[in-house]
View 1: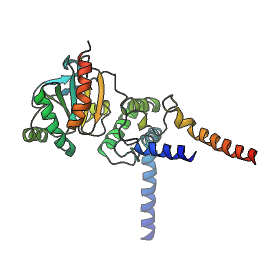
View 2: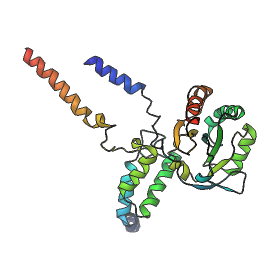
View 3: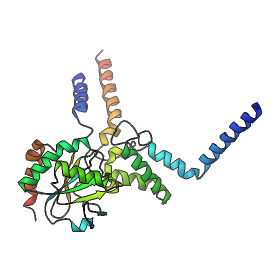
Length: 166
Length: 122
């Protein structure tokens, strides 16, 4: 009995409660119509590519994003998956300056100034990254900065599996 | 002088109660909902207590939704559809969290069983 109790407590400790399973997985990207950074045009869910891509939520005020950005630049240089950004609750000039300093791995950036798209995507810890399939269905969500380890061991294998789907 | 101060404080007291009484049904609902939603950033606080930017955004969201006439059930579903049941301090009864609901009773039953068995052996 005691052992079972200790085991339960241990499981409770080892379980990472900060990582909340997203209820959005296997659902379509929510509707939105928002401006594109450094452009006059607007982006909405209907002009997403019919291709597997990563949707990365970032901000210039986000410290963890700086480290993650190196990995995103690497992902972009490998050209194995497309990368679209959501600039979350940021200042436009700050965002543009930030991309100049750290590089711009994104095809384009959706400007979510008031954070409504963030709410619709259940964002609570920037950076967050969504893996989207050809039918624009959310297949996975990664909360926190993506590391090379996560990219090569989790994201890339998943991309290879879902790229073969119709 | 003293009576003036007294009158002044009385006036302030009345005016605050009046402003709280304004549209009190909505205010009550607002206060109820924000104390029952978890702040996802600082998970041991509700969004009423937290000053995290997301908590402020979600409070505003709840306010605008109440003003648009949505009820508590709709607002809570809106939140849990996006942030999972984890955002609700009072999670609904579901297969996934059945242990959460019946766990304590199960635990009591097991303890009772153990004690009871010991008594029989004696």
